[in-house]
Image 1 (cartoon, rainbow, N blue to C red):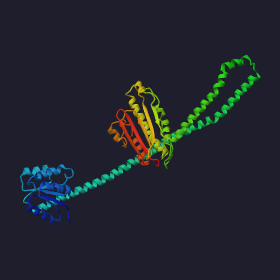
Image 2 (image 1 turned 135 degrees about the vertical axis):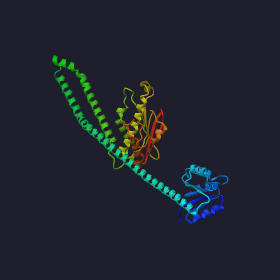
Image 3 (image 1 turned 60 degrees about the vertical axis):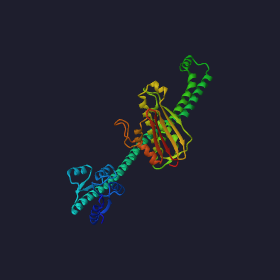
Image 4 (image 1 turned 90 degrees about the vertical axis):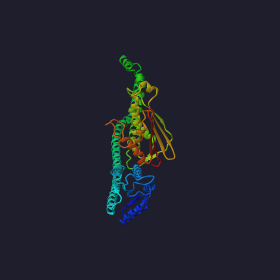
Length: 427
């Protein structure tokens, strides 16, 4: 039974033969080298479990061989036992300082040699076994951590989508009821107004000479202006109700409950509904003018996807762009921003592999080290308590894992950032 591989290095053939025979009789697999150069080659090509190394050799002595092996990460851990006639304390100390595990002085006792070899081979093999077990356990723990992180992302994503969806859907529902009431009553109101003006016209026809009090009241209320403006007012109310209806429909589009299956989805509809949700953050404030949104929409086909999840991706990307522009606005004057406006540019295009969406801002940008980590779970550039580091990680997971797409970030410090995502047409 082979108990381990021993490399014996000695420039004396007789010594090699004697040591090799002793080790082979004990059940070890033995390799030999007659000089330092060959010892280095054998060790690199077929790493042994232990090296018995002579010190006094021509060209490259044992100390130099040991030093080279210990300086190479691939061979540094292999145990080395010096086996030499040099018995002085200084040589022994030098050998241990170079990394040797033991020192056997020639001539040696057979039992002593075997006892020391057995001890160091067993220690080496136990060490390798322990390292393998640690690596296996580390790999298992890493897999478990990855699964836990993925579960966390999915849970956070699910809860955010559910909470946001319920909130937005509830708001849309509450808006829809009074808007529907207004819309349904506008036509009867128009008819009633026409009837009332018709009645007034009939009175004026039948009684062309009203008394002084009626004439004063007609002048006071400016009847002709009311006649002209009231219907305009009703039409304005109708337009407002229609606009609110559009907002309500956009809210329902944004909050679509699509957890069970993919559906055909108009990407532009999702982008527009997201912009509507964020419109209040785009408006001018006391620090800056309004953020301009420039759309370059191409004629792209519908994408098979989970619309609610894709809208969440758009929400994260556009909200991040707004934050980058807000941060930059703190460093620029109102006039400077007017001369070089804050912009978010949204482009869509179609390629063979799918629909491409680019969301670009001319904000602060980010350095390369942050770009490399932007999609990492838990990574955030925000202050403690102001960011979870999950938004971009969730967006990346939605695009790459849930939709088999791609998502990349390109940025230049001080010049802005572009997020480019591709969604396959077939989902």
